Amino acid sequence: MKAEKFDHITDQELLERFERDHNNEWLGILLQRYTLLLLGVCMKYLKNEEEAKDSVQQIFLKVIQELGKYKVSYFKSWLYMVAKNHCLMKLRDRQGKIPAELTERLLATPGEDTDLQRMSQEDHTLELMEDSLKELNSEQQQCVTLFYLQKKSYQEISDETGYTMMQVKSHIQNGKRNLKILIEKKLKAS
Image 1 (cartoon, rainbow, N blue to C red):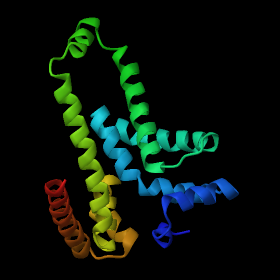
Image 2: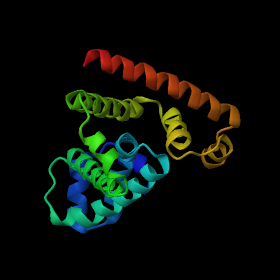
Image 3: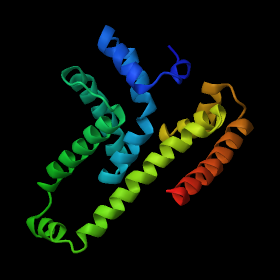
């Protein structure tokens, strides 16, 4: 099952199909749509690429386990909350390993409102980036995703997609530029 075939199917329809026949492929398509958002959320909170990638996988597993227990109406919002909670738990666990003096300094940070505003702005930007990525043409979207999110080399992308090395470089370069333009346009509009 190629995910692109199901681009026209809404999140809600995919959820309903999953609830009806418990086929994890529906869930896989749904999760694939939000991999970028999850990675962005994890990077924002954890500030560590490897830990963020591991967390995305852990969140996928948690979603698979938890989804059957709840009636989820807004998958994207629910998934975001699962990711955020996962990261906050990791930070809390990590904080146990931080010396008490440092913990107190972190907790007594002045300007907490500013941090919340900044985090809220970052959340908004991540959502804009995810939406903007979907607006790129399929070649750019595929190459940008493989290069930046899956950390594949030009050669690996060329082998996987069948594009020449020049085409891969061009799609990444143009995709990155177009993504920036789309995000800036959305940020001005919001």
